[in-house]
Length: 253
Image (cartoon, rainbow, N blue to C red; front, side):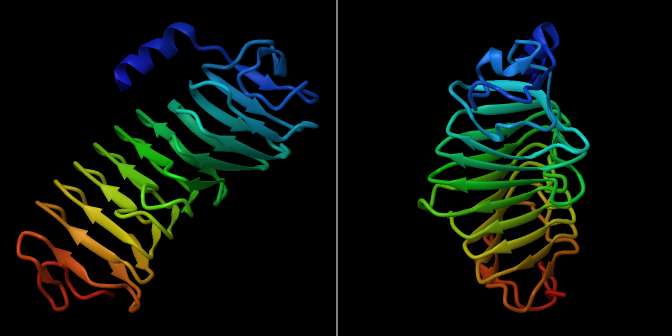
């Protein structure tokens, strides 16, 4: 799927800048962009009189760049959105993205947040998800799983990484899922529900906090996992035992 998306982007990529005075807040309306084409390459954002942006159709693009001096933008999404190249780069301003019911996807080496932390802030509600594939990264973003039930998810697939993100898993079961050879990187992860590691994924050097549970399956590893004393039980499921001594998990430190 990633290859197909990348091929489409290469053939049709178009860069556009969000208008300083767009007629509406619809991302998918060509007249709101300069030149008047909905971007499939890089969407640039500067100052604008309309900073509340929504989506009326699914979309894929190379990335979003917030220029120096850009306004603060608030995006509301209930569509499937895919970043397939650079991802989100905040050179100025801030981006707040609320994602309801559908998916935000990051492919190839895209990032959810390049720039000063937190470059971008995501609020995942009502069964929404953020999915990382290939070697993509959560970067310096802040991702929060809010209300709306247990279906809110963050998935790290392939060799993706949580980077240096701040992840707040207030809901979801499991809320944060690491698979394949993905890594938690050096992220700061608050878990009040469940985070799982499977296949050959790794907790890396991430710092964990909260009242939730960490679960390790298959050949996943904790490596230099750091836990606040308040973190809940940590389980290795092949043996169904709690890691509370210097064994598989190592003592939280």
